[in-house]
Length: 209
Image (cartoon, rainbow, N blue to C red; front, side):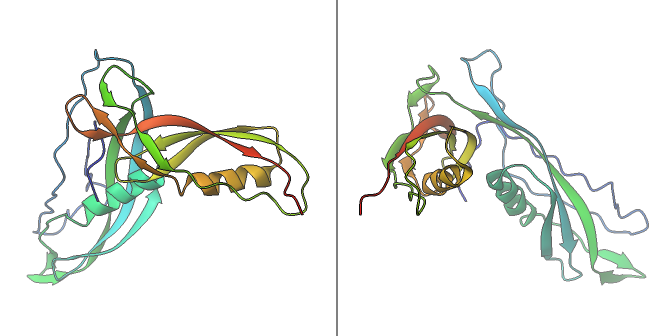
């Protein structure tokens, strides 16, 4: 998966279920992080928080099952899981014999997204394919649903806000259509792909027989 965060900070915490009684040590491998200049042009801190994973460290020295204990968006959860799978460690040992243990691992994220036409951007995200939502069956209602999206460089779309006076079914259909949007990511002035928020609007009209 592409690295898509402009500012991301990983912190691995193994102290919760530490190898206190073991003679082994856990080693982590994370991607390089980049700090964002807080005095740069306006951005919005879209997500800031911790993804907590339950990771199984196998006696073979490999990473086993990974479960999300508490997370953030799907994208950030996936990033945390991908990083956890790259952890390098020495298996826990008892009397010199390796054994499997399960431990909590935490990743702390701070994600910055850019608004439309931010001066830090070389180019805004460009939607190339925007599927139409399905009109709910047996409904003669018409109206609009406005969505606020976060478009990530890896092609994922997250819906962060929905505004509409239509029934929930319309909103759900709009969300489903938005999740299938294809786009070219926003480009930072340093040439890197970054996340950007964008508003889209769907108009529902009664279907003709």
